[in-house]
Image (cartoon, rainbow, N blue to C red):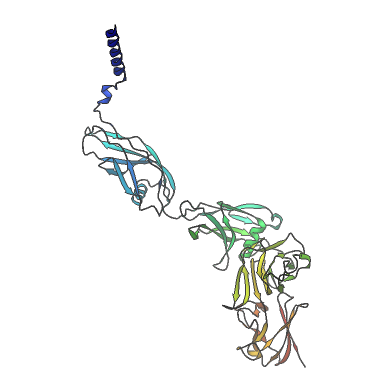
Length: 476
């Protein structure tokens, strides 16, 4: 019985072994077998990675003979092309050559864009039959070069009206810029000034690819850029894309919209509430609207913080003697004059809701609501200089200031008829002359002209009017 059981066990083991064997026809087949293309990760092609290599691998073809030539093929949008050939089961080429070959094969590829592409390997056997591998899809990030945004107007013609001042409209769109790989891109929108090569910022740090604004804001920007109200003109805009590695940015094309702005009615005065007087618009110093220059205001004011320990003072402008119509500037720039000097000057060119913070001081303040600009110069002294008062080598008389009347007064001996000026702090950075027949305070303007009889005069510079006025009173 033990012998019979032993024979049965052997028989069962043999039966089990036979049932687990692979079909000899599969195991020892000599039929040609196509190569198998291995999977591949996404391919990044940027300026920084151009020197790197791209490598594809596959299994060797089976039973097709020796010295086979494999072709790495690409397929895009229904078209096939050979990328490269290889005598082994792999191929390698630089990313620069790889990218160039793809753009040679497929003219429809977007320039510097990302796309998906199909790859496969083919080989011709000794039987002259082409055998093809499996296909794989690879995402390619071909961001080799920077690409500037393309700006497009949403509307070709806009007529702005005061009645619809709060109405918001989408005015511009732009394509996404391609910059340093994997860095966030922001955009700054500019309006180009009409009569100069300058441009004014409308808004920066934009993350969207379109821009909307209400009619009042657009009207203010257009008028500030020098375009006339009531007249339809082509207004030009541009966008600059910026990322962390490219602070100078990429500038878009210039896009134009025909815009008819409406006439802006400016308040007669602006108020200057701030930490120099307790932030109370009703009791704040005021600044008058110019009777000669549209949208311009100018005065002199003491802007010194009531906190004796503070060295700076903050303030804003209000169009009414109360809050709700207040504004400041977002890009205040502080400087000193003359070069290396001790007198403060302040400029700004972007009206916003921000406070304006300046060093304590007595300032000449000039603001243009039309142009959206702010200019402030610290005034410590005023002096008379020029041919009519003795020469151009020094200040020959000095002025004193009365804060109640806002009038500067000097006794000046005019030795002859001729040119002269009133300058601040014995320096030419800031002086009063004549522009378009009125007293003006900016560099490069014409001289004041004295045409009365020589003699000693009381001269008054009234800075409570806008524009400022100068009067001469002959002393006995």
